[in-house]
Length: 333
Image (cartoon, rainbow, N blue to C red):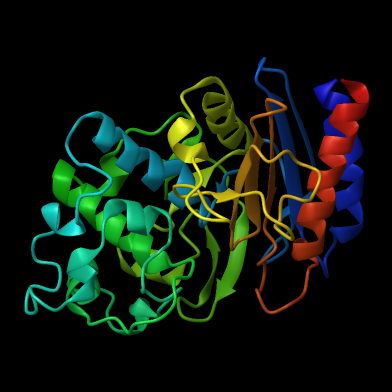
């Protein structure tokens, strides 16, 4: 049945693929019973040479790093009793805004605040334009007086969480054990190309697309994770079968810890159940898990190849594909 669901849903993606749209895409669908299917088409790279996409190619998962790596790391440290979600970040990073211990808002942020994106920190900031030294950039993040603004989805939240994990464990993020077919770059197998980076002056393959993550050493709390389509499905299956209470508990109208929860207009489509969480990545990736249907699907693309500065239709494709996955699954159940 899952094979039929994936085949039907991928028909929605086909018109978006091509040299002037999304070069390549892989759709994976998995049920809690372990039945899975993968459908893919297009190219892993167009330049400098065309290369067909295969099931073995590694994708830059971009912000899926937040939910597939950093959030599980933090929750595991909670399980071990090393931190509490409502502890201040300063329990792990005592030098955070160390020159203003009384007045700095950053010193009153908790792990839960950062996971749920309910801080005053900005969405994104071009850290890489300040330095290419990871240690210096981390010091900059910790000592900068960040402007006060409304709570928004923020890379800075997860950069701080990544630094906290490194401080608690005494090891870099890339030393954290990950499941097979997930890894920080460079990738152990063939890689999907992302952008021709004007800063690095090359087409990126097997190295993180996100400029800040690259400048921070390649593995950061907000980006840096790579995976194959089966690696993402393995993770989703683990979530479907495991203890998912922490990542399903609402933390606002649109969020749980790390993840988005279903809301009107989100990228997972309107047909999924209220018990659905999901997340997307800038490079063109996404993962959605419907706990009521015990079903998950991932769409992995290289929509930024060879440039981010085109409209590939990814924001129309994702919800349309999600709704088709659910409609096909319900019809066949």
